[in-house]
Image (tube, rainbow, N blue to C red; front, side, top):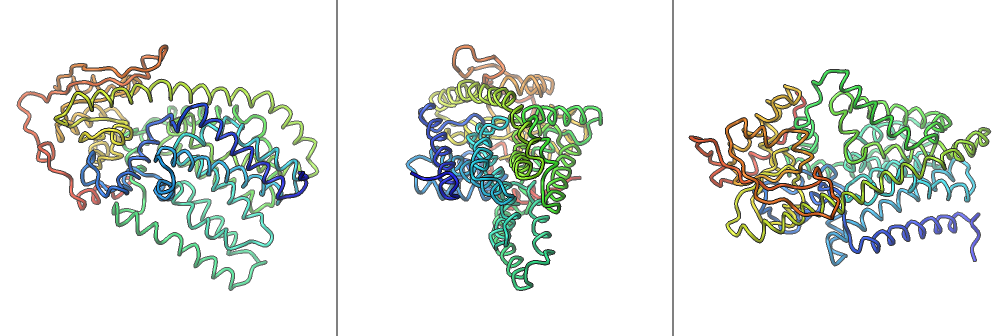
Length: 517
């Protein structure tokens, strides 16, 4: 029998409990299931890398539509180990969750918490704001949370090791938002008076050595070192030129939800030490939130606020700092009050997770199966959720957002973005005119928000509903996918692309070069 006060025993206990939690989720769901279409974009991108071709988005490289190059690389590696690529993606999320928990544990130990306190803090990371359901969403959220947790752990190591510079070299390719945290961490390391010039030189060389292959991969595959998803989402959602009142409302709403979900533990961030790390984390938060306020405040609300979960390790580190300081009593009081709020946020995330995997995911799966059975001629289909149909289907697709169809980005940049979304229907119509798809697949919720069907009708297209994807009883209408037959306006002459010419690689690369203007 081991004692919890032993570091290895406490860490092992955290690991075993975390593995058991993910194992239970897998068993309860009966398989590897994911609540959002973005997870299937990851699976499709990995599929393209394995096969060396993309039958759905012809001529488009695998890295297009992938925000996290590291996540994609790890997924492809795990797919060689597991019998199912979906299982490989689930295991990747579980491993990220395990790394997240252990990173918090060791960071807590580093600032002086007992092994017992550290274990409780680390495991509470699965409950905080329902973080567990962000770790099983099939996206790069969990990997980003783990990266931040280990960044804090390595910054508090005494002495610091080369692992910090290695992680800093990888973080921008976990998520672009982590670039600032990576640069700030390297600045702290290189300006430290307690490390030798030789170690600093080795650290800088290590970071460059890790960064260079990813930069080359991005450049060779897309012609840009910035993921194409950055521009595609910014131009489509077009919030940069919204009025400030609306942007402020969106941003403050997202932050308010996050504050309530993590209340009152987020108040512990004021106890973070040592000071340089506290300043870095505060600056990172300001830059992160400021950039979203400026260009994409609504993004903070998407997928149950998943982008904000990179702050969960920071909040928990604040708790650890409070419990290992003269302010321990205050920290314990806040932890006691948080017991009242943890179940609320956890339940909200759970309900959304269940609603998605039994609602719109089932609807899209059913619709995709129907398309495969009824369209042997493989007509071109226009979609906005670019993952599942490409992963499970075999139809030529046009992504009207632009994540997987780079040509669409130009229309949104020229029309949607500059008009703060007012001309989005015109941009979608232009995309349809260029590619002349025979059908349209749209989620009712998206149609309600962005008037996709009515916008096409207003631009002279004819639409006829063909099929509605079935889902579990009680699924709201907004969570159902609809298939429409789409006919071009009379007198329209299809472009070369619409007649079947695939976009060549050079054209794709030129369209992917990110220009924030």
